[in-house]
Image (cartoon, rainbow, N blue to C red; front, top):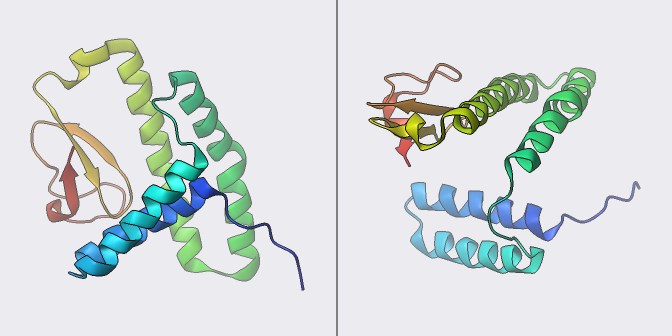
Length: 150
């Protein structure tokens, strides 16, 4: 049996947050609330701090695009997991778009948002800066109803 390190508190916080959201969508408020409490507990345990710098985000994005996605894609190909390969494809596209948004914001600041709204696709994480919600996600083809206005 291979030893695997336990998940970090930050990873557990993210997992519980996602489970809370999924339960909420399934109209299971009790379970959503419990997962929400777990997420808050793990976030506190992880010492999740306030905002990070542009350089920190850029470093994370670069790491994801240069090694993280490559490793996941390689493993998914080895085991023939088409679902994981599809997620990697979406993830790479969305991560590239996230970097583009960060670069645009670094150049334009708050002017980038003037007259626009920020919409996030709940299915894949695509970020749209637009006056109106997109009719269709350009990454995963989710309909407008899957976008959340931030």
